[in-house]
Image (cartoon, rainbow, N blue to C red; front, side):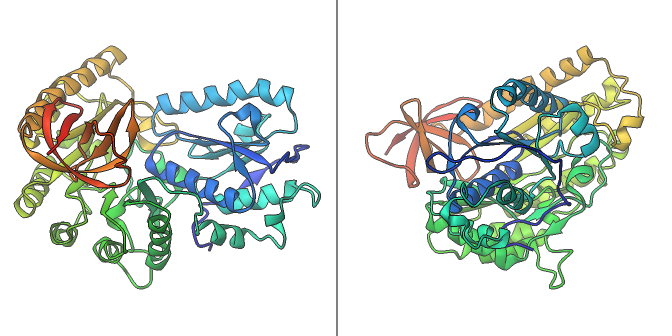
Length: 458
């Protein structure tokens, strides 16, 4: 195993005539879509390539190596990936020597992908950074290999990347575990990322320490089901114990984690969030539906009442906790009455954020065998109903912050204003001539909308 990545499966590639030719160092371009774990994979890939003498460019036309990091959790994401792949056919025709790599969750049946996208040189499973580096090294001749490749090994390359010489973003994701042992019938993650596999805590802490040394001020521990962290490791560490270790890193200002599963989030984690001042009181807790029959068909492993009881425990222990959730509308067989129960749950919980999507068939999942019998127009109606209700709810929640002081971790400048987030993950904008990048600031909320807040220096 390497220091920064655990390969989810053996990578496969075809014989190719592509050769990476550097000008002033070989150039690479990474295009990423999907979850924060994909973003973390791309960051590790970039850091490893940088450490080995590569340089990142903004346009695929200027690159010797083009990497697409893909997502297929929804049909819309898959369509974007396939559209991007099709658009690169012309680039490959003009520049046959450009190496094109597809990695991420689209990579399932490699033989089918090869037939469909013959211009792609390499197909990699999610998180297989080591496989990418080994293949890149094999494509380069001694004459074109950057000096950093002398005595190169993929393990050495990934260790070198851990130093992360380039500045890190203010908020950065660190993968704690990959894959998932849950069997939600609609979800393709287990098929593509495999069962849950946790990284040893010492690896996670070392990566987080390196990121903080490079400028990160907030670390987000990532996992498809982060609450299951450590169950597959001999020492049986827990998410709570990992939070306590990362919390003590010097220079770290904030710590978050996602995504939680209602059936796996334990009281020890809730108590740890309440006890540690740098752990943000924010829970990403997908419920997906508010009707028990639909939850059973989804294979969620919890009932609506279980979810509401969990929310009550969280708010009883952490009164100012913010909650975000995911909702799928139009799941096979969902009736209007069952959908209304989802709206009822949203009204009861009053989430700070709701991510809603229409159900789309994911080939190979158990739900794909069910009739997709809710018309698309009805799915869209239900999606709009959720969005309208949530806009009303979060507008009322945010309005209570008017005139209140909040602490904001400033992430970047956006359209002439500083942009940051509160511990409860609310987006705040403010104007000030000084450089607040990566710093904590106290702001008085002067305007409150459903999707963001405006603040002023006190």
